[in-house]
Length: 469
Ligand code: CS2
Image 1 (cartoon, rainbow, N blue to C red):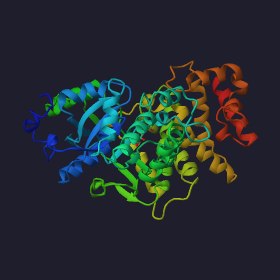
Image 2: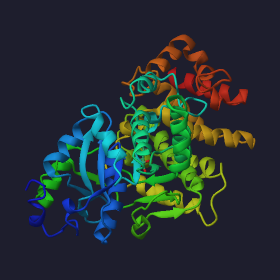
Image 3: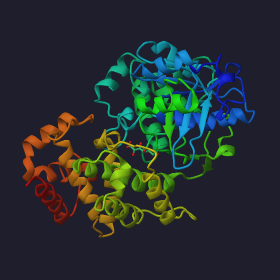
Image 4: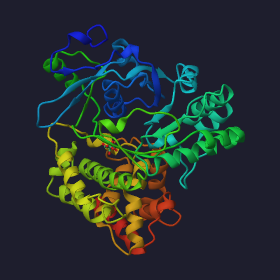
């Protein structure tokens, strides 16, 4: 049965469906970057709030580039199923929270209209690390071609262009400010968004920058749910087990966590009634997640791919890589920052190991390996610098870093990374003798996170050379 509003009442009994009538609910949220992660995470919490009787929190999704989610969800009236996968029986739940999907390049004006609508209170974002166009030293990379283009033709391609055009309109029509809630895997994601948007607006119209500082808030948040890219066999299995023909289906683990800084300018759904945690300081949760979960993920990705493995569950079970990932989490990442009172990092590491081992959730290493240049600073390099300052070595991270260096050389597989060409050029000019310093030396490409200890840098160079010989 094809999933859409007319078939919603005829689904198999075990498929949970919205307790509200989706088209009767207005939108209160615009989400930028409506990929699988958003659909398995923030949209689920929002759907739960409407199931519990809250009204008018549907989400207008925006795809900044691709048309695929629009094409999947539009014939389904925005409906899709989230299935959890574990050793227990899967739970299948149809989510009604997404009202529609706008494709920004097709209709930029509609995106600005949605963001500027007086009904919109919150803008959530999952645009990946590269969507923030951060300069190496923090703040917005004003030299990025897309940013420069957006400053001349406002609202053209980046989140900053769209937000600036919408905020301009909101000020003009007295629609009030917005809560701009970043849900990306970056340290201090809220502050980073605030700083970069401010950089953009200062160039565009300093009075709008000032208005935005006074009328908008930028809570930080930590989001966590493992969501592998959906495959055709997943969709076939859903059809066979639940009778559901769903082009937009997402498959995830039972675990889900959302820790949000309680800093909203208008109203918001009662997400905390449905598992989210509203706190005054997200930083320790965000740091634990980035350095432990994502840090171990990236290590397993590059080291695992080099060994010919393809899934996280295979890599964590590998007799060499499993112990290395555990050391990285427990001995290196977990000792590199001060946890929040009551935050139990050893328990967290136990949970992570169990989640990585989930045999029912085929999470591909290649998916995690993507965009490494944008990910490793907050996943590994911050741990490395914090421990260096305390005079400690981080051997597991160093091994992972060596394996990333080899990966971005691009000789064993195609590299999907916005810095791919720059990394390849660096490899060409530095060669294996100089690549470690060319990347992580005082004047290296990653100079913001340079490795101060000569011995550590040399050790990294040796690890790279050993693998190559
Ligand atoms: C992963 C994350 O693809 C990646 O880089 O490390 O998407 C990870 O699965 C999520 O952050 C889990 O919450």
